[in-house]
Amino acid sequence: MQAIPISHPGKQPVAAPLPSLSGYPAAVLCWLLSAGVYIAAKWVAPEMPSWGLCFWRLALACAILLPIVHRHHGAMMALLKSRPLEIVAVGAIGLTLCQGMIYRGLADTDATTAGIIMALSPVMTMVLARFVLDEPLGPWQALGALAALAGMLVIVAHGDLTALVQLKFNLGELWIVGSAFCWALYTVLVRRSKFGIELLPLVVLLLGAGALVALPFHLWELFNDERSALNVHGWLALAYLAGPGGALMYYLYNRSVDTLGASRASMLLYLQTLFVAILAYLLLGESLHDYDLLGAAFIIAGIVLGTVLKAKPSAARAA
Image (cartoon, rainbow, N blue to C red; front, side, top):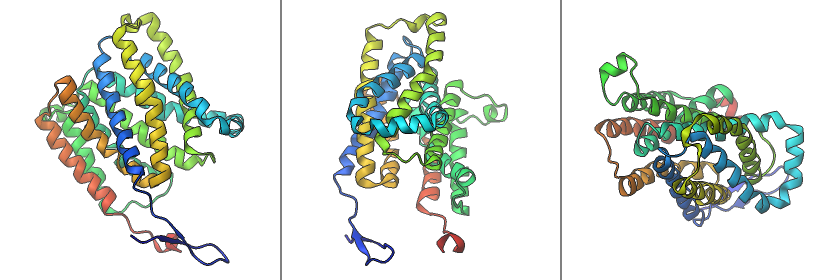
């Protein structure tokens, strides 16, 4: 393996080391823990409302991680004072809405199906980046986006062409599609905003903002949802969602990004879909449906077209 040369004005090129292999175990464990979130949320869905899960996961994960980033508290406060509305908006989209929609959707669909649909988010990110960040979107990428869209429609229509024509979709799966879109939009907005602080302190700020936005929804549930009282199952699910599936997962993702780079670390997100299917089979007794397999085939084709066959930069961009 060769080093990648980096040029600096007025200096000889220096060699930047390639990513260390030590980042891969952190990334794999990160997405395994993330897959466990789907299992825990599906398991407790009949007994605990979605926005309560969302609020407590975000608030507790923020509280756990806050002491770990103590060296960055000054920079975090400065950013919060200078750009509070951006922090709240990005946190609301990427954490409150994204997670709340997942938990709401899991009340009406399988964890396995939800994991497959969430694999759409990188393709959605690619398309949104074309319009928001003016990143190139070549014909292969456009074809990949269409293939992934077809896969999503197959899943939400349960492979029934009649349901597709009559727009009769499973509500739970539509919530998951909305969550995938929110995650893609969040990813693009974080890249566009360039907040200027390290990833983990930024995540802690966004977790706090997300919890703040989720609080009114949770308070509404306390007065209107009979499932709002926590029981043993709810406490166990929250312990996982906030600890291993929350704070530890975000910490490991930060480590994997630092070691592997954002692109490699993000590409490993597809492991989450595999882990969700395996855990759902072992722990929830779920199995893949025919429409899941067909939809997954279209989504995988879209991912290959969209990420492997990259768009060539224009001459102006290259210059």
